[in-house]
Length: 87
Image (cartoon, rainbow, N blue to C red; front, side):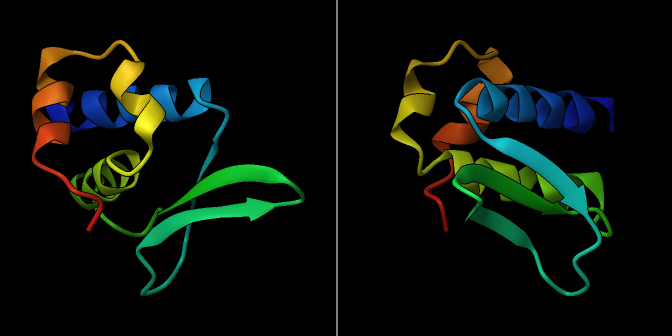
């Protein structure tokens, strides 16, 4: 579990460094995703989902942001991102 939480925190930091505001909120059945609110890019994660599902959502979202490739990241995160195509 600590690996999942660590990777989720690393994903959040990368997204923040790229100018996204990451918000975790109860979204019912929704998975979350990217949006723009008042001109600010945001990533919404469903707080009601387990950490592993929130991590999968973040990996899918980060996989479609080209600038993520240039960000420093742990080997574990790089390997996880390599397996995601932004489904």
